[in-house]
Image (cartoon, rainbow, N blue to C red; front, side, top):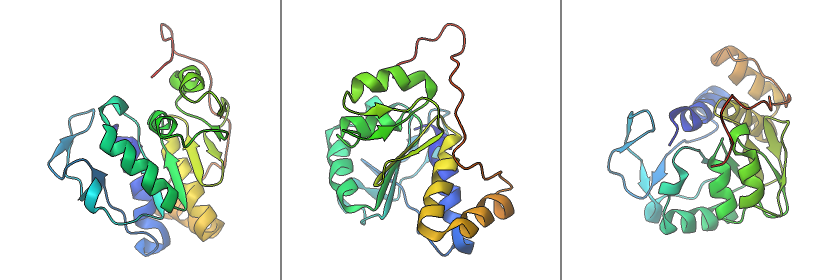
Length: 193
């Protein structure tokens, strides 16, 4: 997992409504220590089989190819029970594998936009927004856009004053709305997963 992909949104949900709105927990194949892409150790709270139901599921990016069939099964089943399933960055590819992007608008990190078109052929891939809200599915562009996506979800569920307080008072983060995402690729990149 990319550390900021899950830590940024987690912080938003942890502090919303003075810490009273959400109970944040992590889910993985095992509760053994796992490592982020930057080698930071994280101990998941639950395994797939014993995780409680979640109203909001955040699917972070990173080494998404490491998610096995059990993880995909959990995502498919639990996203049907959730109010919102949100991806951050390349987490959109997991959502595509789970069939959650079929027939909806979605986005991902700019390096993955072309690849997402192949991974989810019936999805309308949006290339110029940091957050795309398709109802039960919310997707975000790269890494820090996950914070914007989480604030968008807070605004949807708790209202604009709650999102503004979380962003501006607690996190000292500018509430951006849904501004356009940059589309330029760095030299020498071709996109993809």
